[in-house]
Length: 374
Ligand code: UD1
Ligand code: UDP
Image (cartoon, rainbow, N blue to C red):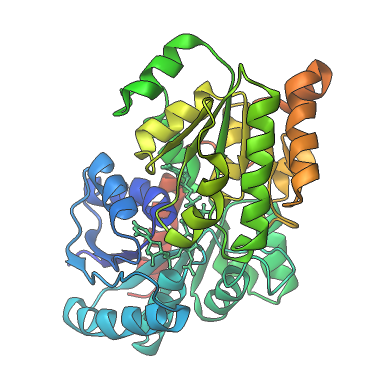
């Protein structure tokens, strides 16, 4: 019998990063693949599954507006446990540091099913930022049987915490697999305004924001900074695919009303978003995944956070941490838009997070794990 590998995921970034692995598992004749979505996200998750042609075997449908972290965690564990009992997987894959990811890891651990942690070993060094992700990652590290680290840096973080060297494999980050499977196909934008923008050749500032620790005052300051940038650079177009979280929208969007050169959209499908990344001049974001993708496309990234668990591209010079202070955001974007030397020094394509073949290393690691446990 082929080992059954269960992949559990629930949010947009997890879906993007597990999609290449699920496709590889489905194509392999060595494994039986079972997929479970928790539905922590709904529309933003479904968009990704549709793009990659993944139809989940189980859907816990846990999303409800305004639910607390504890409610998400409890609903995942409660919903997943009977599925683990029924499916009896040989191993469970979880990705990253969301509530879905850590709750699923714990549910599997309680049933003594080995946990495979994709994107293991990221650390900001500050338990309160990103919140609750830094804690989630550390908890999953404690219970994982196999740690699939994207880079040397993440491997070193795990070793420094005493993780057994023989359980760590550097695979690269599967986000680069997803990116290379998607970018360059130039899927049409659903919104005709974006298609017209793409044809215009105008400079684009692409913005995403959603981090929990930036809710409230920090996001208000992002909104004010964007309004000032829009007025200072009338030839520039600011594109903001707004996260579906109402808390995010209420903080940022009121500042952008009536500005002719700001386009606020619904979350873009991954195909559209990677096309927009490639068209953009500068990226302003607090996203983890975008910090990993943009350097591969040679796009300068300004990160609206005080720290990052992804220092590789900062060291390489394509990513800068700028925080959420309004003046600093305006000054940092202005510098990149007006100082060619600074821009050129950041706009170098490099791939610190992966070569697009991470899924192959993930499958090899799974083979090694399942054959050693037979
Ligand atoms: C979650 C993850 C975060 C990850 C982010 C990616 C946790 C604690 N947080 O944060 O690590 O970086 O996803 O985007 O796991 N909503 C919808 N439709 C959707 C998605 C969200 O309406 O498709 C709304 C709902 O009101 C939902 C809210 O957004 O309650 C927040 O979603 P939630 O998953 O709790 O947190 P995120 O901030 O998205
Ligand atoms: N993304 C997308 N559509 C959008 C915005 C982002 O497909 O409108 C993708 C982006 O390319 C990246 C991922 O979503 O791969 C990042 O998700 P998010 O910022 O929500 O979460 P994080 O990476 O911060 O956990």
